[in-house]
Length: 457
Image (cartoon, rainbow, N blue to C red; front, side, top):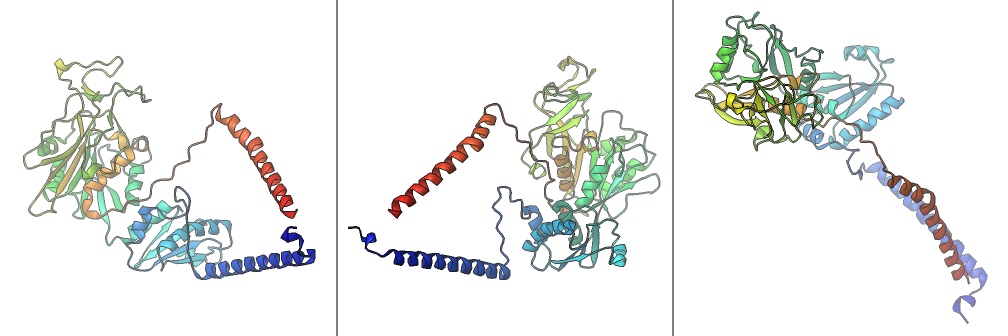
């Protein structure tokens, strides 16, 4: 006779009740202990593949450089969904910065504080660090981290952008202006201001970098010399050239020893890559150099000039960026079909379209840097987001501003790619969710019921 049949049924039922009671008691104990631990120990785990619930490495590097308390004041009703959403974002900073002071102020209840902080919208954030403050209109990890980096800088770095002769405006919003580039520079902590050398005699002393784009009108006498004087004292220059005459910048070109090749760079594969014209230079291969360390995406330079690699005595060509191997400098009309004619001086690619020059002056910083680009369109409002143009432009500015210790900001948020299923995947997904999974659960339930029935016997 089996052993379990000798045990009275009452004893078995009492054992089951005691077992269930013990299970409930232990479960409640685990829940209470977990709640007690959670209340006293702030520990977070982010198991998402993209680590979307914690700060990016760029933001962590920025906050780790702080050596004083940081205060964030959120101007929103603390009980509102907007405040809760902002709080979830700021919680990531609390995990990385133990002494972060986060406060919430309803601008309707504290109008004086909101007015003093120049708050005009619900959800704006006031950041305060070492007596410096900044109010943000945009709430995102990139915007907050960029503001923290700006506040942590001991001094402001000035960038002068030459204007007054039809150049592209650093604060303009036309398609051919540099307004979006100016916003990018401000995020990095650089103060970009227009400079008209017709109204001042020289580049201001507090300026370390000048950005020069192609003027539409000739420069006045003495302006090109003022730029040369700026270089003589060790300043850095980003010169964005375009096809056409130098219009008063001939002395500067001779000072650097530049030799533009005739015509424009033509890329016969541009149309196959989805571009509208073949008059572009595609930078899809970068040399090993600190300037290009973070570059991988192809940059598109429309209507670009190419250069010879010889420079003036005293200057050294640190590196240069080439167009593709299939390109050449087209001296004729840029109309299909394009054919290269080496007899008239059209050289086969790769052709240098970006020159990085350096030299050392006795009375200047260890290394003076100049970059000459055979195109200025790639940094305009209309072209900045095209392929790798933004990354290239910021890499140029970073290399020229190496002494300013510019931060690396979190990447821009991009929309997730849509999930597209083909004709084979769609029926498989439908069969899996409507037939296979329910069938598996049904078989599992029947199997558990059968096993319990066998044990009960």
